[in-house]
Image 1 (cartoon, rainbow, N blue to C red):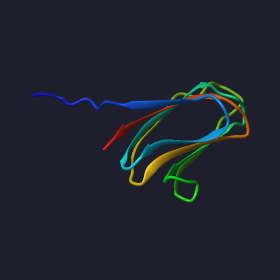
Image 2: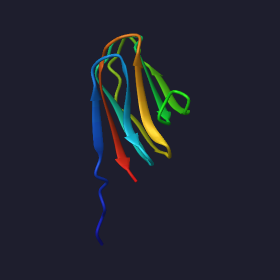
Image 3: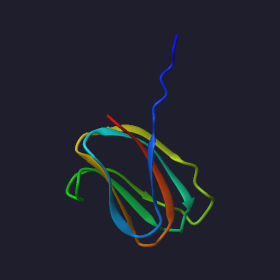
Image 4: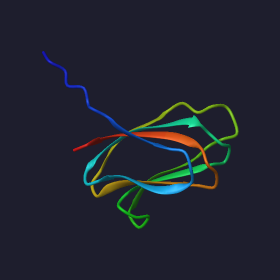
Length: 97
């Protein structure tokens, strides 16, 4: 029996910005905070703009270091990430469908 392993794409963000990670359908796999900054906020949308459906709003605590956030949820329009309040280093992994 053969097992199919998803081929994850990833995008690294290191500054406050809105970043369109994917246009079209896919699956948000994980969000990993490589260099978290306390009280930083990352918001993820199923859409091409912040007018899309909100998938998650993640506020980072002062401590301890957070483990990766695993979502494995489908998005249909696109995947948009918005980093606000402080620069941090985060990697978002996803699969195109």
